[in-house]
Image (cartoon, rainbow, N blue to C red; front, side):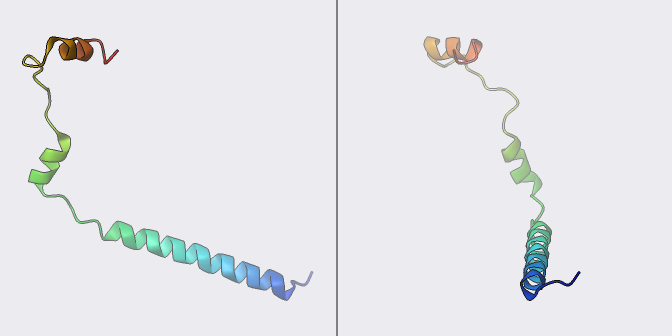
Length: 67
């Protein structure tokens, strides 16, 4: 079974596309810098939100899950 020139070109281009995609993905992962502890704490957000000073209708929405 002989491959045509068209089949060979298709396989080569497909292989290059996969290699380029993997290269881009690995490079992008390697460039993510670690977060500073201060920024990481801001990203987590507060443990609880005090709604005691909210208007009554907003507190009611909070206690019923927004419904």
